[in-house]
Amino acid sequence: MSEELQKVMAAAEVWTREPYDAETRAQVKKMMEAEDKTELIDAFYRTLEFGTGGLRGIMGPGTNRMNKYIVAQATQGYANYLLKVAKQNGFKTLKPNTPVSVVVGHDCRNNGRLFAETVADVFAANGIKVYLFESLRPTPEVSFAIRHLSCQGGVNVTASHNPKEYNGYKAYWEDGSQVLMPHDKGIIDEVNKVTMADVKFGGSKDLIEIIGGEMDYDFMEAVKTVMIDQDSILRQKDLNIVYTPMHGAGRQIVPMCLRSWGFQNIHVVPEQMVIDGNFSTVQSPNPENAEAMTMGIALGTKLGADLVIASDPDADRIAIVCRNDKGEWVIINGNQTNIMYDYYIINNMKRLGKLRPDMYIVKTIVTSELIRKIADRQGVTLTDEYTGFKWIANRIREWEGTHTFIGGGEESFGYMAYDKVRDKCSPSAICLICEIAAYAKDNGMTLYEYLMNIYMEYGFQRETTINVVRPGKTGAEEIAQMMVNYRKNPITEIAGEKVIRTKDFQELVERNLVNGKWEEKPIVMALGAKSNVLQYFTEGGLKVSVRPSGTEPKIKFYFEIPAEMKTPADYEAATAAAEARVPAIKASLGI
Image 1 (cartoon, rainbow, N blue to C red):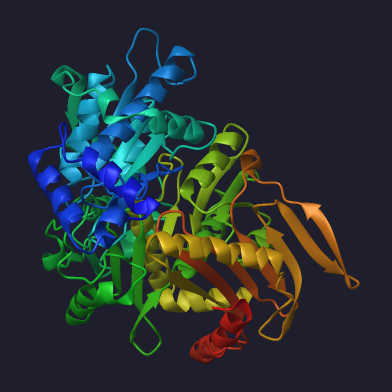
Image 2: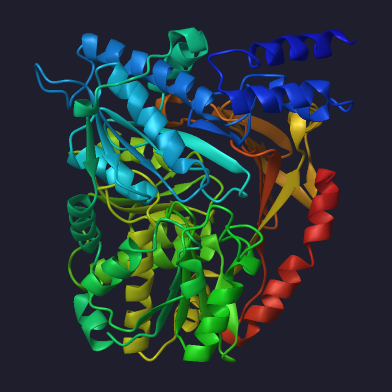
């Protein structure tokens, strides 16, 4: 028996005794007795890492799995840190002589309610007041509730758009954003100290307050503040909208919000309104996957809809499908939605006299550079932040009182159009894209034609994301080695074009090729934070970003490929020309 297997067997043996329940003990014993130890090794070769955003993993018994014991240990560590900060008077929202308080929510995933109630119980056992949602709710509503109730933190049990085998645990701070430094590291340190023997259970029921309908109403009212041009909506109130929550947490709140904005012709996909953690009508509940939109598009065709819209299981991400100039359904990618949001917000606030010099927008470093062209030409401040809405939230926090946030998003189908939440928000994003469609229709355009006009004004480029999946322990090692190799052997040419600028966000160094020589300058990022991301810019306008995922076993490659587009009719040809370059770009990167 190898040394690694001996360690795994020793870790697993602990789970065959109390306090682990009988079902868990039996499952672990079965894995230990199996001839093939692959499942056992993957379940116990490490402890599921509590990262900067929390936990995410496959559900099942084991230290490297999502289960009520790992959730309880994580919550005990988080509780310890919250109480430590409170003792140091480190919260702005905590009033004297009141307990630390948190919001706890979950989405539709299997074990979601079990894990959420486990979280609530452990918090309460530590003397922390808990506002527990009565049933599944959107991630942005959890963020909103933390701010609305002046809590010091919160937890949402969700694995977002991951496959059905996964669940997760997102930790939030008092401003409603996912935790950032130094608190993320502080929580991680506390979590890593906790053993099952340290976990407190049996919290007082008096410390757990169930919330629901009233918070839904307040959240809906907050979403309404995003509206820019109600007149266009009222004139186009019959815009034909099909919506699907993909079995998840948007099922009630999204239609409610749309109606509150004035839209009256809303249809839902009935089969996908059913709460289902197995996501039985889709292969994967990810709005980035075209297959997931099949049922929505079918209903849209039947009803002659203008738009088909989806939210993912925890209702933070969105997908948008509209008709092209031939009447065919086309999926608008995440970069295109962000381009339309920012273009619309800036231009229509300016048109209505609402735009002020202190207002700004945000994008992430891997999101389309076309947005920068829009902001620069319109004289609006734009900041580039790391991937993840916690970084957009951090920018809002740093500039609060001096600047006004009017929108921010990232390419992975997420947008946040207001500061009343501090995470990506599908209810507001869905309402806003419907407003944009209403405005377009009011001006004799479809949503698709509105996008084409933006390309004609600012130039076309195609954004494509390539995901290289490498599961398991060996996969993680392979991904890490890929990043090492890119840094050891710098790429100087991509698809026949010379690289003239690079950015390394782990070293915080930008390198520019000037007169044949590389010149360096520092990259300044929020909180001086570093991230394992590399970017390459070529003389022909290509942009390539390389980023290992922080939550999934894959490395992501983001391509921005310019192509000529003289008229809107050239869109498909320009798209095809850009896509035709992908194999050469991949070859240059060795993928």
